Length: 198
Length: 198
Image 1 (cartoon, chains in turn purple, yellow):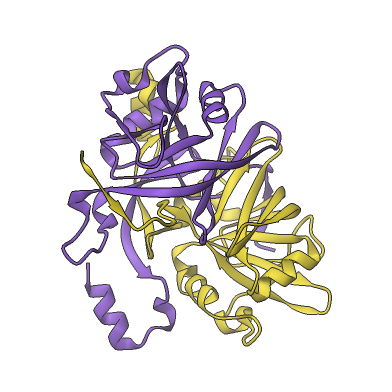
Image 2: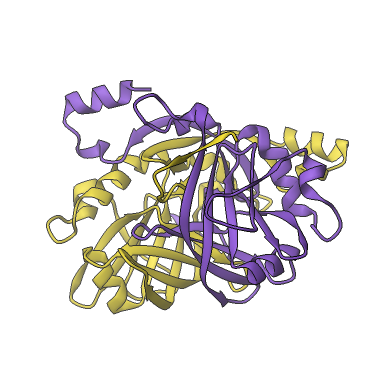
């Protein structure tokens, strides 16, 4: 047997790590860093985020029923880490990180982050208390991307966004492209053409 | 405004991409590739996977209430892609990919993949039909790691596993380590020491 036991825990890796934007009536916009997120449905497009109930952002999201998911590029990494360890009760995270809150399409309270390469506007469909975290299931109602990532043919050049992944306590940049969905069954000429694309 | 709209969809990135092992009484063990997965709770440790109901593996997981999540290293990438585009109704994926099914600790049916750097044993807590996909919420009951990834001091050297991330249709290796959880507020000497660790 090649395996040995390790402490039972949340050892999925790599995971996304994103800046979640939120706000509520009478409360200033806030950011919380979330690695416990994932796509949960393709049609309709849905994702989940999990947030501890003691976090300031939990109250904002529960009250407003909306949030944004802002992808994190290398230039946002320090802000991303900071927004994961500090509380919006004590600090204006947008100001502390030099980030700009913008209105998010499709939402009326939660802001997106102007410096993010791509954001998703999300409405909460339902929430579930699971233990340490509350799971929010949400519909993705809008995707906004930085214009410079859109190529003339409409392709989203997300590989130019320098995205960050989270793995067992560490942040990593994405490294070399090693394949594309379906590459294992592609004909040789398709494989060669598509791997040479970028 | 720096953002332009993009087709509303599942544009979270990067995401994990994992081999899910499953089986049911009277059915051969199978593998399905899943990128729609994420941690949903730290305590108790829980994760979710989303699977289309027309997939062969959906029936196996729904019937057995258990599955394994096997992380994907570079050497498993071709198998990982293959298990995402072929059906276990037509092919023995373990055999076709030269992979070895092993009993998973804590489960009685779903196998883990001997060639994976790390696997999680999961019991389904509940499932929800969301649209194209059914969301399975599951408890993580065991973590098995390759012995060679465990250092003498008990640290899990996951950075040596050559893990793969999925981003907008492409597979990427993890690249350079850019920081660790809390690095943005670490004292200079801690930052220097911890960034030099590996």
